[in-house]
Picture (spheres, helix red, strand yellow):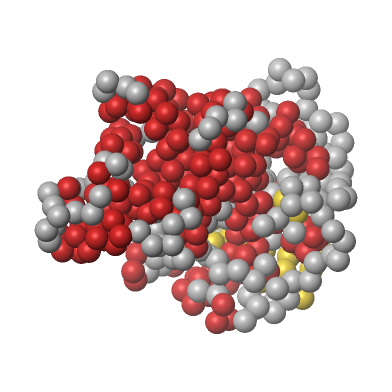
Length: 445
């Protein structure tokens, strides 16, 4: 773990703000040997083969950040001077994906993917008006600077400058054991703070989804948010309505996964982002409804389960997030299923929530009362239904949220689940890395 300052900071805002700067012509080099046994050996092979053929190649982005924070990276990404076609010529197990954003995916055993991206630069000439010294910003508030294309090749410093946050713009040189830092990211890693590269007002107008990404990194990595960045998140939260709806939904699911759903939701609510993305839940929490406390308890329980290593499906996580408002509309309804659908339908339209997820949420919610009673006999028809695993996971979240140490009904239903084999049946999950939506502006963390 890297040493951080001894001064006390708010969990939301650090006490001091470091001014954001643009890319420097010369990087700051930090000698930092990272043990090879902490780095994916296939990522090492990719970097070394690219270098052997006279290309620059570095580990980049979230994997470097996580290694410096003494965390285990989920993925290993590589940035290189090689063009996508040149990468493909060096690796038989390579495929090129994307149109506007062309990437090389190198495939290994067990469906592992090492993503290789060519250094890029910002294609928008308007960005140049901002200047590397934090000079004149873009024009008035009416300027539409939303990024719609990001596929212009460049140099390492240009690639660093087009990323979203400083902590995601670090390169690691395997051969020299050096961190290459063009944007002050190493300082922010040490300070444990999320800060945009350049003016946060411009960065969030370029890509409003960065607001949710800032929340994700702060929550998952237990980091503070730079005060200027936090202020810009609040000011530009309405811009989220302009973002591509599938990207918004995917980012919401990412906030709920990984054991940081409670803090992520709280930060969304605190910044006002929740009122734009999920106004139904924001209104429920704003009104301090009787079930508001149960929302936070449910999210905390879901985090405990996920931190134990278990995966909760997107349907379960969404049901936990909206469970209390859904119960409220369903409890006095003549047709509870229709009432639940009525609350979920705006989300289907606003966020392009898949109907499969909506149906699974409704089915899981409707059987919660039945699960309070242990099954009779060795198994039941309910335990063999395709949605049962999600329904039982949701019930377990409720049991934990209520602080119940042991629940006989839960134990009995788990036993019935094992007998019917539904514990191993397929459930809606996040798409694996090779099929995820292509990134436009930043390396995923």
